[in-house]
Length: 427
Ligand SMILES: NC(=O)c1ccc[n+]([C@@H]2O[C@H](COP(=O)([O-])OP(=O)(O)OC[C@H]3O[C@@H](n4cnc5c(N)ncnc54)[C@H](O)[C@@H]3O)[C@@H](O)[C@H]2O)c1
Image 1 (cartoon, helix red, strand yellow):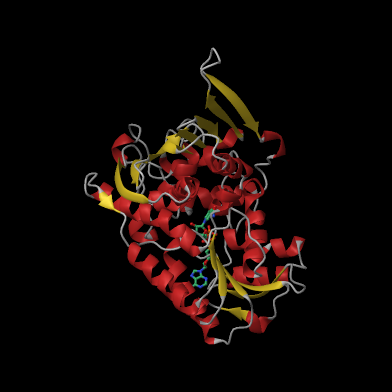
Image 2 (cartoon, rainbow, N blue to C red):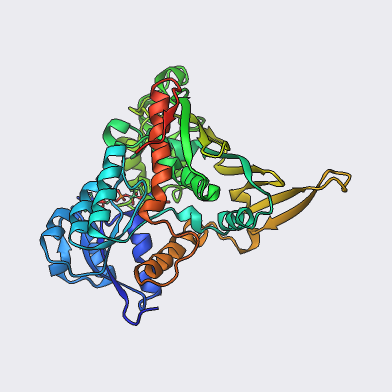
């Protein structure tokens, strides 16, 4: 480990950047936040006070920061999806290395632009695929790598998104309308899962992708008879509807608080009530918003050795979960991330049940209350190793490592728009 802490500038002082930047509070010997750029002056003042950033190192945006000579080692870029490439490019050209939120680009063209800039300026860029840092996926990766289940024939992943998560982020919230966010549901939500699939498949590369999906349920024609426009203003179902803003956000005010009341954390119940009732986009009827992203999508991938992968995204589920089923030539893996448990089943003709099981139970050491089960800060620790040329972990996701997953997502969305036409994963 190097003697002096890595110095970092926050670009986009939102929910995600602050989680990463807080690593500096627990580990001042490893990371020091020395600058900040964000058009939101309240966020700048709050973060400047928290990390002790001098006024001359506070900027209104990435462009203003890029006008100054480089004065730190790295950038923590936690801007929104559509701003990742435009905010990164000028700073990468200044020579900064970068921790960059996913998705690192919102189109194939943007992806190519970023990859070329990084190649030309030789920056180290790590993408925040936090799930690679969870013990659950790390143990699955190690199991596959050990050869225990043989060669993978089929890898099947499912992501179920709960009704309240979907209603918050993809119906009422920031990723609801792709014309505004420039991000598809698959890209925003499942680029993690497709990245995991590419990582677990190792050296085998995707060749063709097909996909189908639609927005089936969360639209006006499915609203209950006589539903209003705003749950707490004119809707008779406010106490009974499963998507009622009052039931989802006010009855449990900690649920999605960082999206619903980022500026109202300390407000009273009455203030929150009035805001949700009359002002907030999260107070709208979930059947009558301007959302256009899918609520379910299936992706099929053929790899260059003949193996296949599927990913099923389904929203509006009773609870969120990620399901993994991987079938190899000698055995298989079955598990659910939220249970923090998976079973490895080995083919065994000498056993009456035809197979022998090994159960991997990580639930005791898992804490859902710390960011991604500890993955958020493990990722920052690994980023520091990557930057300082120490040996990073098997989870480290450089920009190049993240390209295959993003490419599959772009191809899948292209296929879905063309009624499932197979799309070759060419750059
Ligand atoms: N890795 C994960 O598990 C994970 C989880 C959730 C979100 N994300 C991703 O993290 C990113 C950030 O999400 P968030 O909810 O923290 O966003 P946010 O909206 O809270 O923060 C984004 C910040 O960027 C600022 N900004 C906008 N334009 C800027 C510019 N030109 N220069 C500097 N700052 C600018 C905004 O003012 C805002 O404060 C998104 O891309 C999201 O998809 C990742």
